[in-house]
Length: 562
Picture 1 (cartoon, rainbow, N blue to C red):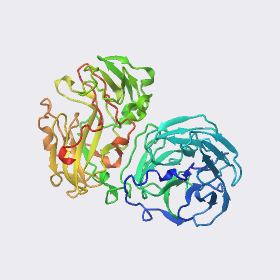
Picture 2 (picture 1 turned 30 degrees about the vertical axis):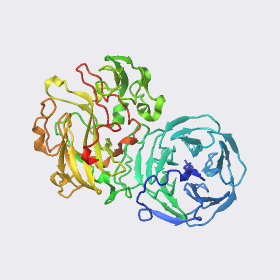
Picture 3 (picture 1 turned 90 degrees about the vertical axis):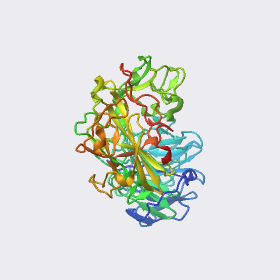
């Protein structure tokens, strides 16, 4: 089918929101795959397929006048007037003919034209005055339709009317939206740019498929199919200069990994990311290599995969008083676990899922007894986790202050081999933390269950290079995962010592699977399930339950790291 519009919007005033949140290094012409000059400083840039040849090319809007080009050589193909100063300007294929044409949004009234400089062929109201207008082909039918963003929530329509087809949170107030068909599936999906950090999704939901840094905080982000291959990529407009790419940064997109809604994939190594070391962001440069035990049967897992294979329950004295069908396996809305949905989150027995309601967790609401609370009940057949570690992300916490990086690893099951498995439970969150001094690693803290962390100097630990090979000058610390319980040890020989909790012992061996965590990474607090206050695992008759996930201001690294 002929390539249709990317649905990219341009906005007169709103695109300035969010600039200056933090300063990022540029990924400007030195990493742009092509650049050109078009228009004047102050012009509003827009991309579109103006001639129906399957390629998006630039246009600018100056006052009420549009100047469109069919190439990247500053040649003006057509100019016309449409809209007035102060409108939000959009461009899209409104009638499915393969050609993008102009539109404006005035208040909450949309005026979309099927020709260049014509009258409004489609006039309707959608959204509220002050909403941020976006357009895209949300249902892959070959035509673009309206959408609005209000307080970080997207409201999309599949018609020229006020009917909302879908809504979801994506991004934060002040982010700059972009829209594109990033995976060539015929459907446009959202993206946002925060300062110079891009978050892109291949689904209509709050799940980020790709992240990277490109450009400056004040740039105007744009997207389109610049080479006619059917997939949209990205670029920025900086005054009259345009810096574009036909591919995503190396290592930031794996086409073999599903990128649909409720899929959880980030990748590291994006050239141009902030706080650089070499060509990678620091949280990727220092990401650990986890050595699993060769006899391991409880493998790591993506939390999203875990949620998709769990049902949500609320325990009242270990009785499943609240376990409605819409909370069943494969039905859970990740966002309704976290705080982003507010009062629309899952609710039971007077509590929201984002309150700390994990059974046996201290500091909970006074009306909860020991076994009360929300928990994710994993289907037992999935306790083994995911043996293909290429699709399992590690989660990082990297505060803007740059004082430390904390890495979190999630396993589907915590298995013990003593005391009749009384300490086994579904779900297992583990971590290490790296102390930074002037942007350089200083110390590493290795955590194990109910133990004080073992803190070692950077110079005294094992490290590997980017391929996972031993290298004294490598940037990736090694952590050995104890068999079944997954506690972190700096050296193999320390794994056979008594565990500080319950006097149990656990083995670590250096010959197991190498988990190179820098190949798949995600920012922890950007996840839609972040803030879930229940247990990641069922409530057991053996007085065990899954853990509480990393939570705001909980399980921080040592005070000396902060």
